[in-house]
Length: 313
Ligand code: CP
Ligand code: NVA
Image (cartoon, rainbow, N blue to C red):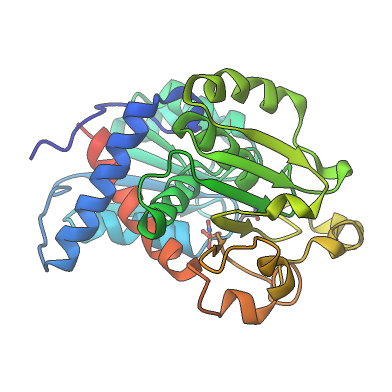
């Protein structure tokens, strides 16, 4: 099976991908997961190297990339900003040029979206956005895969994000849902509405697929949701805003009563993790039978493996 569907492509945000390309990556992710379940261990990254740059902490993203690449014979190299010159003594452009001479691909997690864009422009190898302040695309594809494991083809399904509506996870979901025809509702206080620029960006994608994109502060909007999704109230890098966020988002905690407001006994709960139990979600919901958060975490690995297989020529 030729898995190199998108040779040389970077993944900086889903906005640059077509519906068919994302669908192909989802199908490959499912195949990769099935291969693993059958006990197959192909060595498709043998002789390959992956640079993994982290300005921010990570459990899932680091472990997903590192184990997915390593178990298929590749050599992943973890580079925290304590270890490399990036940002301290060397420009992003120069770091990109050097890494591009030594590695087959680069993963980056950090603050600015512009950093991951410059890495892609100057390295000449595929670059994957492992989370920036603006987007978290490798999370969003794992979320859609998890939604499909419960409900089949995601097109026409209702995904409802409740929480900080302008964070990287909500923003990435808006883009991928618009591209795939998933109805996406953001329920968030007015002060945390996603910016108009993003909504304008997504409008033509949604028009093309029939996705309904709604932003509201009304919790009744969870009615008939297939999935209710939340994320931490305080994202990495925004710790100084903690007190303000807790005040704004208090009414938006996902608890059993909010899940009941979907009116759907089969609706599922999603969370990208890490979770602050008792803050954005109660323990009974995230640890309860409607939660698919642990499947989502596992699917991070299958989806990033598929993305790397598709793009590393
Ligand atoms: N969901 C996610 O990206 O988790 P980490 O921050 O642990 O990588
Ligand atoms: N919005 C969260 C996502 C963590 C995976 C953050 O940026 O910290």
